[in-house]
Length: 130
Image (cartoon, rainbow, N blue to C red):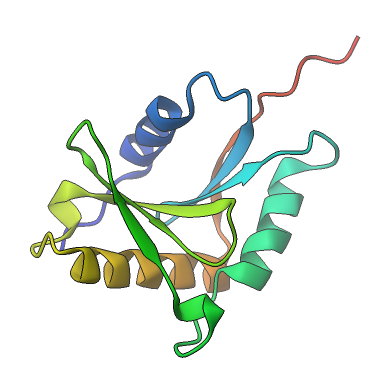
């Protein structure tokens, strides 16, 4: 399984969230935290959410996932037990395109992001302060 570089991840998330009007924070392994509220430091808020909802514990809600196939054919989104935490899995990352294999891979990426907590990009969609 090939790793995806940071620029590819940023570009993928930009395409996915264009026009949403939402700010988002990307972590090193492809997990994105989408932020609905506009206040506070985005990276700090996203890190707090991922610290709580990123690490996986199999057998509980943190082990659950859902796989969504992207219509543009570039990969999948893997969701978990927090609605604003989503992990991107590129086509080249998974030799097995089954939802089970992709979901387990995406969940493991979320687990790494949730324990390492390394922010690589912040997209701030908030309107500029006057």
